[in-house]
Length: 89
Image (cartoon, rainbow, N blue to C red; front, top):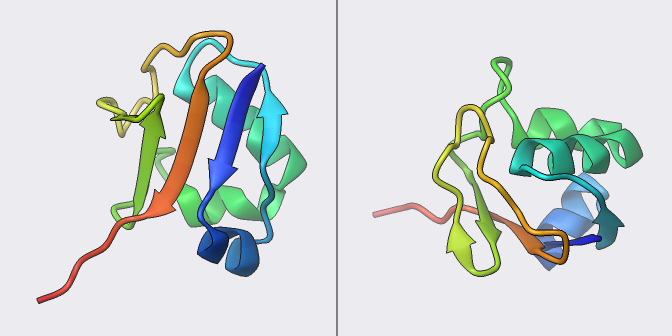
């Protein structure tokens, strides 16, 4: 099972909690997360299904490369970590 984790801020404001899902790609795993937390889809993905600019996703500590198609492969026991991107000046 893929372990999905969120920052405390996302858990509190978006209403998501750590969970275990199945999926061979980032997109499949996120689809499983959104099946549990439908409201989260619009926060994490834009209307084209790509990751929003203010969201970062890491697979086993490495940033995802395919932010538009979410086709990065993930292992059966991977850890998916979602966090807000930081910006400012």
